Length: 374
Image (cartoon, rainbow, N blue to C red; front, side, top):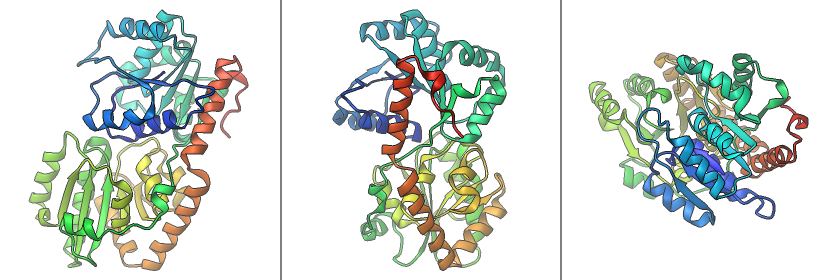
């Protein structure tokens, strides 16, 4: 059973759904549990997966009864192995597994948890005693877990996120999107995709875009996603006098089409694990500017497949975007190399195979022998 904090429209949820979709059903019988009410659109997305989806709403704050309810679900469904994604889900799933007698718990970490230092003693106990193995989406996160919790190297494995690259590799007609979003054909388009929350650093992108706009080019900024900061970001766009050039689309399910619309894809995050949106931009052959945080440098091979800039630096962000918009040959070369790498190394099929190997090794008591990450 996969346990997730919530079924929303983030990268974590897309990874889990790809895992569920790709697992060999002759070997695994997957199910899914969300600890918050799912987004309506995500309920629709799970209907074609032929799995049981359970919702055990946690509510606000710490829910001391949830481990008992979750353990009852594990016993009722005769769960043999639990894969919990991110520490919030793992705290409950590890306790529930112990209550239910489930011996195999895999924690998957998508983003570092240094922002919650007060909970580190609890996390340390869970990592040392509550889980069988941990997977992470980047080597940066792997080093973080090993160093922070003094875990044995063989208990933490890096499995990079993968996607269905074929969805992004096919040329798509964007003329209807231009009309829908009010973008003139031929205008330069800067795009970003992510939850509108502090982590994603969208205010720095808006400030960088305002600086670029003063240079007089015909350009638009498209920000795809939803979150608690949307109103603040819209207010900032008005304050910067660029609201007529910025499009907030909200949640979209046509990401491959949107990626084709962008001349440059930008991810201005303040911290990351290994974001799915960068992999999608690579698969679509986009020129990429990203902040040098978390696993971003790894996935972009330290600048081979995109440009890295410091976080919280709107001037560096603006200069990097401008340099790519001004040099089509360089931008095109970065995009082609990124797409080729994504097609070889970052497929969902490859990701699923690695999880299958790990799950099988743990279920058969061979987790200590599972090859650690290089």
